[in-house]
Image 1 (spheres, rainbow, N blue to C red):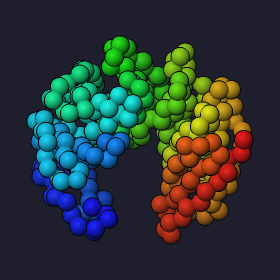
Image 2 (cartoon, rainbow, N blue to C red):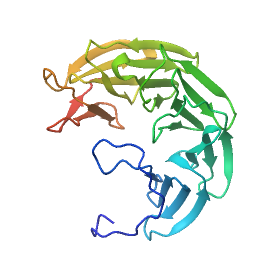
Image 3 (tube, rainbow, N blue to C red):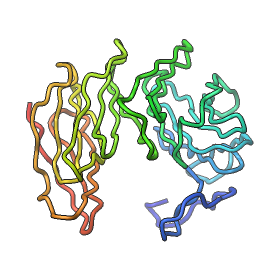
Image 4 (cartoon, rainbow, N blue to C red):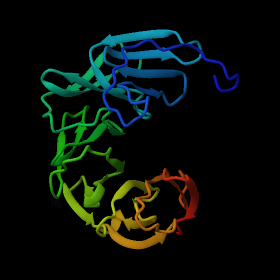
Length: 275
């Protein structure tokens, strides 16, 4: 409880180290609050759990190995990435974690490859990355849309970003991609200069795509106009020989974007996107 500075409870789970970068925080454990802040959802090597955030009481547990969990703000359903011998699965549960609503099985090992794979939720759709494509699954209708990437990726995949009918994906040194889910076509493939990589993508209200680059620049595209390039903003000065890991966060109201860099020293800036 941050208002008192006191711990509510200690979560119980099987915390298995899956990645080491000379840090002591890389464990197979994922947690997310529900939109109302009342409940905490967690996954680890032993399963999926739902906790009362105020008391710390464990309310429900579903056994099985799970990698990540995401609450759906619109439907209040819970989407979890389960790890099985047959490969990864997407499981949709009701908000109380008592009933499984839908399951997407038989996914290849080339999908959801991160230790804590990310899934973008919008309505009743779950969008996620695979080595050679991005997939969008509607668990209500069962429809599965496959969006082809320009080339297979050898690195861990980022979480796609979704806005209305548009899907964007950061592809590191390959740039970034933007698709229209109504047509299934890739609208643009953003290219970056040599030794520059894309570190994040985000949508601003209105369907404007923002692409952050490691040279301190942010590019802006209009998805509704076939991904037309609008402007390039020099947010932070370029530092020779240094990669800047920029992250983006758009204001819910049109007009502003928070740009932060994890490079040392860390910096943040609010930029005006114009109208």
